Image (cartoon, rainbow, N blue to C red; front, side, top):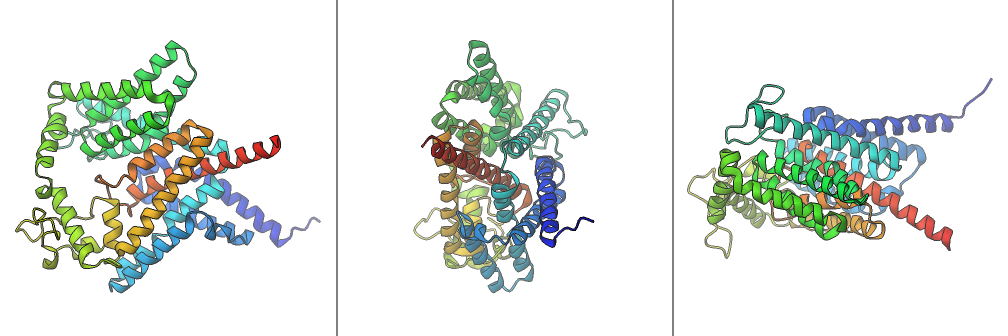
Length: 433
């Protein structure tokens, strides 16, 4: 009779958890599109499985290495600020927020440690992007998507969704999912491959413009610029994509008048007097909150909970033009529409400093690994994460699964790729030596 030790049994269980986690993360992009509750459950499950694995291995190095101590410190600051806000809901939400950095750490050091697993996630992201693109074009050409939903009230294409979410979802899949194929095609060389790669990139840019959402279009433009700067092979296809985007915008009055009004007319109107635009008023209100609570902010969701307080209805110091309108609710929304302002209102300048340090650590880690490897997927992951963490832009809430789930999925994949390539290069160097 063969007997098994408790330790071997535990290792067998954790090995099974690793396999389950790899399957779960491979299907996660689909649920990011259609099932936020399921996606959040997947993220939470992988975080819990990772903790079980580390306990079974008696491994605590992951707590002290790399970027995680900064993430842990940021989380603790927001938890403390939430506890001091005397809101039990805020405190609970802050406590469970740790699932996101745990999920990214799990992907980096445990789940996505092989080329095969990384490429399965990339392919899943690409398929999700193809689904969005196909539904956008069906809606543009026929008037409705597969579910029978028409364009949004302002003319934006909704793709596979009921509401105007196609632009942000397409952005998340654009670079690490869809753009990888024209880049790899271009790298094969030959006039035919290069022409096909440029045409594919141009088609993707055309689709993003026709979606008709301002910020995703601007973010895609920034991403294409970063591609041209970082990845030499993309310069021709970026030129094709950028040229197509410009020509499409010029032709929008004919191709899609609603998209032209939103992307061009409404955008210029907002920029002509940004402080008094909807977004300007939101940013002013958030800045006033940080000015009143500079050290620890107001806890998780403090901006939404306390936004109506008349104490915040003042102009930002030293900037007389930045004054709130007479409406006491002006500048209030469900979130600040900016990652950095959201962190600052939740945890004050202390949390903001930790978040900035964390972003710099993440991006510098990816950049160093990319410069030494010139890996196409890693370069495109660096591009999308740089775009998402760009400070001067409008974002959905960083703390929600719809945004945070995508960000930490792409971050975990990028960090795992960088780690694998760095270890591989070190091993080759030692072998050569």
